[in-house]
Length: 168
Image 1 (tube, helix red, strand yellow):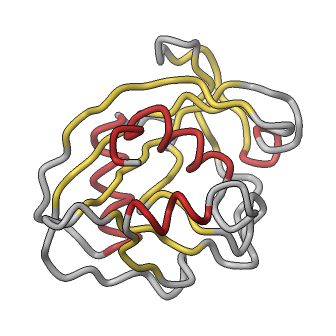
Image 2 (image 1 turned 180 degrees about the vertical axis):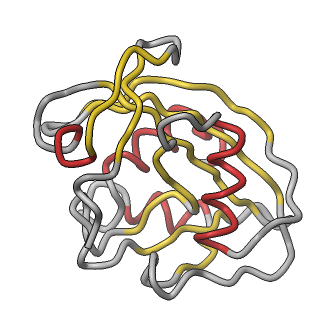
């Protein structure tokens, strides 16, 4: 289960830290803006790796999502958080991230400042058995077919359309 007392930075829309709050507060409907990092992992065939979220997650359990997504810890830079999360979730340390952009994502219970990255990677992926419920590469056609059917997270669907629409 997620640690509801974990401390997150609160940020403005530029990413400047303006305070701190717990995971429980940030995910409890306060709509306090907190930062996260995402990494989209493509292989050289253009397929996109997606992770399956475990059923115990407090947000979007059991749905397919961005290969790597994680909160930036209080006092941590987005770059350090990305390296940490990729290592923890996929066991990858030898990749070259490319910054795609950042935007504010809002759902009914939270607001996140999302730092989006991508990479092309054909090496070994070892999804964390404790943080993920597996993962696999998807073709653009498979992603297109799954959209809007409660298979993928709404966050992923919106981000994919925003950042990689040409792949559809």
